[in-house]
Image (cartoon, rainbow, N blue to C red; front, side, top):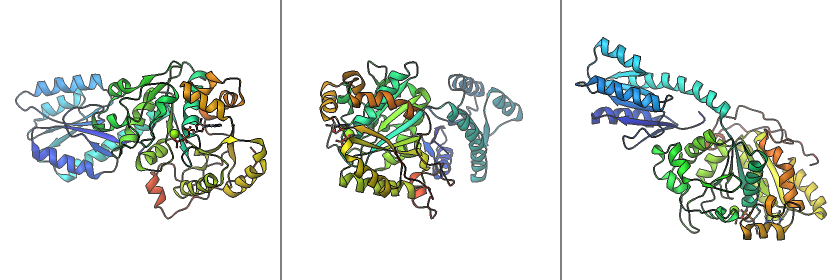
Length: 405
Ligand SMILES: Nc1ncnc2c1ncn2[C@@H]1O[C@H](COP(=O)(O)OP(=O)(O)OP(=O)(O)O)[C@@H](O)[C@H]1O
Ligand SMILES: [Mg+2]
């Protein structure tokens, strides 16, 4: 399943709540909310008010008119057939008699999952495209690439909303690149992830003059910040439901929230330079991604700070990595650092330089799928998680061929 299923429980009966929570939490991809809010829930277990059943039915109607995709499971200790019929008429999807049994709950969840999977695949067709930018080591230019790609995408497609996310919880300085405030961000949203919905997320975004929406990491340098498991998947699911393009600066550390982002992404841009330590790490990273059985056409290697006299080194690197290079970004330290100092994108501040031109020219290749030059995917790896793929015995035969850029 591509994203987490958010479950909410609204029950006075503690026993019922505990049983349902225990069964749902044991299933992969379920996130059970602690409180009683329905937030952005996909499913709600609601207890019937047996003295005032019409109150419960009114509530069901209200909930479904606000969130038509929500599925409501009703539970009660007694239920006459007439009321049951009415419950289904107002939109209840499942009825669970009390006391709950494992068998009833699991059967209802299995039916729910089938309905959810077909709904989710329909939604995925409309979901925005996620591009994750990962640096093979610190300082190779991941933030510069993520920022300038995101702004270029927004400039090229003004009508289509785009977002930029700072997932580098160790750096967290991306706001500076666009002179945007970096107050509340990912860490704030992840604090109560089960209640996160579109409204809360929108209120956390900062708007750049290009129209690009920015979500900061919410971290200060040297914070020991970690996002709760599942947070990044959920945040990205909402972000991509309201933006046509989402670009993520993943930094250069392969930690769990970054792995969630890489899993959710349609495209991973690996940024390297042609320095020996960077090439060595690029090799290691590409081997890891390959062992994790990411489809080969999901990965695009971009060389940053490229100089023409590095041609021989580039050829050797291609042979070593056995991978076609998707882009060569010219070395121009003056423009790149001046852009950061002024908090402006390169396409605005240095649009006539070769580096500014590179972003203007190449952006089209990164908004369409997949990036030209990547090998075609092999193997059934598309829906596995990073860890699932890493620990699988199967290795991906990517069949990559080195060739000229
Ligand atoms: N094409 C380029 N040519 C020259 N310098 C560049 C280029 N791209 C980025 N730089 C410079 O490299 C430095 C590091 O860039 P950036 O902050 O984007 O890297 P990073 O990988 O995100 O680093 P960190 O690990 O600190 O997050 C900056 O001074 C930036 O101006
Ligand atoms: Mg950075």
